[in-house]
Image (cartoon, rainbow, N blue to C red; front, side, top):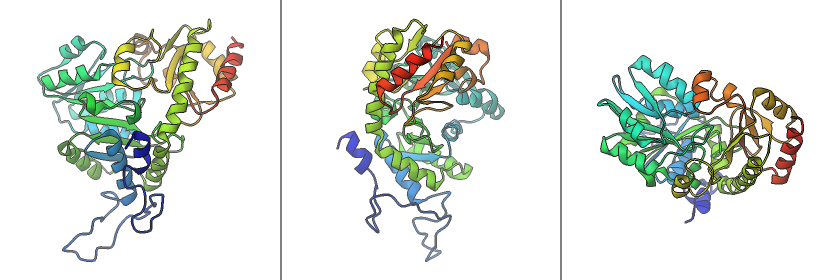
Length: 379
């Protein structure tokens, strides 16, 4: 069964009791137990719920993993994975990681005795030098957010195995449709399902998939006992969005490639970051490990003043935090996703005052280009 069909039929996608074509919303906190000595399949919805179970089965199937878990947000999912580690442990993390992950690793996890070293993950030698005797995992985003740096996942995973480390991949930008981290050697995959997997800007959700049942048992224990499960209504909405992932991504990616090429020719734009451009650093690696360049690109217009002019002139799409919706979303990383970093840290990573991240939606491509054309006319 190919991926598009799996999205619709590759899990328990209909109700076995009624035949309903949509997984029902089981809006229940608890379940009757007919025999206290023989617990039923479902007992309490923090621990198990049929709607959430369907979503978790679906994402595990899509990624080719053993176990899937649905969390109340992407950051809840990342936090649960970080809680696999103990006092005295150390992680190696890509330096251009999502701002929320950066704050978690630098301001919260140190309180529990868990340390992190941030490295340029495109440099495997630097990554290896950062490994300590107490290092337990390598944590990656590829493409990274927001400058879309590319890490060679296969080589990074091989390095991790050399030192008996876990490889953790945030696969939000690529989704399981375009990038298969388990096939490249990863052990744990994380998604902000708020983004492309749900795809409609109406849910906040996170997903984790483990390669092995052993890791799945550990993540499941954390999920249940910390209680950060995804609400049932949001599970249903995410399942609904998942069914159209391929169709949505096919359109958005085609548009993103055209827009990236167009932006690269504009005199108002200093630089374009997009893995589909042959000039993009890591282009060849990305082409080998992913089947698409994705629907997110970033471009630098030189200054905050120019950013404000463009945002004030945007008529199609929205200016907002997040990405992956049906509408195009313009974001300003310096004051949104990466505001927690210092200016010096952002500048080092290329997250300048003039950088804009664009998540391309489902609008007609020509309308997006015309919209940008009139916005640039304000410069």
